[in-house]
Image (cartoon, rainbow, N blue to C red; front, side):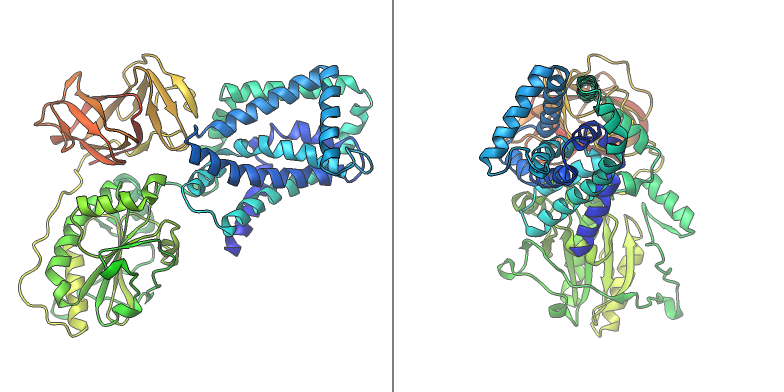
Amino acid sequence: MVLLILFGFIAGAATALSPCVLPVLPIALSAGATGGRRRPLGIVVGLAVSFTFATVALVYVIAALGLPGDLLRNLAIAVLLVFGICLMVPPLAARLEAWLSRFASRAGVAGGKGDGFWSGTAVGASLGLVYAPCAGPILAGVITVSASQTFTAGRLGVALSYGIGSAFVLYFLMLGGRRVVAPLARRGIGFQVAMGAVMVVVALAMLGNYDVRFQNSIASDLPSFLVDPTHSLEDTAAARSALVDVRGEAAHGVGGRAAGAPQPAEGAKGRLALPVLGVAPEFVDNQQWFNTPGDRPLTLRSLRGRVVLVDFWTYTCINCLRTLPYLKAWDERYRKDGLTIVGIHSPEFPFEHDAGNVADAIERNGLRYPVAQDNDLATWNAYGNQYWPAEYFIDAQGRVRYVHFGEGSYGEKEKVIRQLLAEAGHKVSGPDSGAHGIAPSAGLTTPETYLGAARAERFINPMLSPGLHDFGNPAKPPADEFAYRGKWRISLESATAAGGASLDLNFGARRVYLVLGSPGQSRTMRVLLDGRPIPDSLAGADVHNGVAVISGQRLYDLVNLPKVGHHVLRLEPETGISGYAFTFG
């Protein structure tokens, strides 16, 4: 947690030097240029405190009331417009200043008198509410995840350190800005009106989503870990293959060997060379366990003497779902011989934190082996994991002997299981499990994409940003691209159908999957392939007579073609259905 707090401070300082500081900087320079020497300090203190409140308390309230996720952004725009207009009209500015002074006096301070610290705090408090929604995709992603989890002092500390980091940089900007702005301030009303005009222009730019477009254009040239440290870890087949090529590692199915993990070479009598890669970390900070006696937690220490396969997965990940038939077969075949499989459910989307949704997924997929909820990614981080799915093979002494990321290499993995069981003295006789499942199709061209504004790619629609949009009737999207039609409410993580909504995708694949949900009630979605209702012979398991019934939040199987081909799919969801991410196979 100390490292997270330190990272929050550094990230906050970096944010204060990024484009998202533009809405705040004119106000901070203007306010910091007047009053006593302690006024800038008051501004940054007020900003840090109110910013922390906005990113923690307000987000939880908004989530609890089911209010739109872009409410904070809209509030920021309104505050900017009000402050800007007031500064442009001197009589209004005087009234606002008088009101703030009375407010400060009632709070037990000097109403801006003296050294100006408390009056600066009042200004900083208002800036914090403006700054919070403008902090870009990184902070927005953190807020979204935090809103779906329980409140802890640690999360408060991270949010506060982020605000302090930003305030620290702004403080020094104001100290330098006083020297620049002070001569201008002597011109009085003219400078005040100019600052107000800048605020109004910034608010109008935000209203038109130009700030998001500007940040996205900047972000496209930055390293991914700076833009989005919570980026999707479910890489496409093409991306993973490219990583394998760069590292000079051998590809195994869709996935690839972990960076630095040695190749298990064939030894004497066909045995694999399985070096000790390290002591396996314990399962830590899990929320709930399933398929254990009394749903009690397991520990690796209690499993000593048995071979353990730890599988990191999440129930909306198609790559993970395609590995489950193999895991189930191995569990059935080798459990009595000394194998324990432990699924670590590490969620990507907020709704995947819900224990009821996880329980439904376990039942739907027929899993009998133990599964732990890892909502805070504590066990994920203990293993230094970076992928879905990821499998760690642990011997009877609690040591990691083999690691595999992604799909594939099932024959090799079963051989590892049998060898580790034999090393532990367990008798393994008889044939292999005979496990089989669906493999990803060779020749697919369309990579996964997200529907929310934070990570949407390859959409032809302009200004794809949070809010309610009427996209009209755009042209057919080019190959491997997507197009919204009609009205959609776009959030950072999802898109929800409004009036006359539809979605076109020009895909090159055999199978099409989409994470969907319809909170509160079941709704229907028409599925058309190349302009006609998709026949059952080409439809996925969740589509019948050209219609999919959407209820729970999960991965839906929409298209299942005989072979990979290029087609145009149109989805026509009822109002209220939300989409999250496409994957292809």
